[in-house]
Length: 163
Image (tube, rainbow, N blue to C red; front, side, top):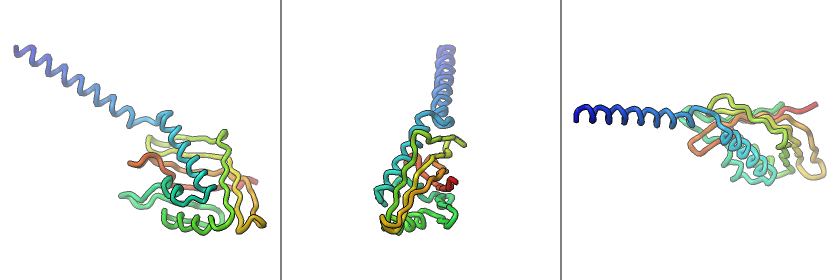
């Protein structure tokens, strides 16, 4: 009886160890599902920006966490640090013309860690105070996506003008 109990105990420990190890695999790798989710959050951001939908844009941008506010939007003429500053910027920008049109066929997602990914997207951005003065320019948009308790979110945006 003692031998059977020990065998069952060891078997149970072995099974629990295997289950724990397998449970950790999903949390310690960047999967194709993660890559797809990062692409989807970027595409949601693009749709929200073009639609001038501040609520939808707010939903795809990372929220402050215990380490602080991870959001930054840096371009040649300006810098916005923190989610409130970024949303305020777009609140003003959306009063005019703003279209954010990435070439999703050339979108690249490159994992940095299991919880951080870089996004590169050739993008046409049209902006202006009105349709009369709006202009379209090509950019390589570089972004950083982070895994949050709510899923993948955008934390950094750096549009780089293409010459």
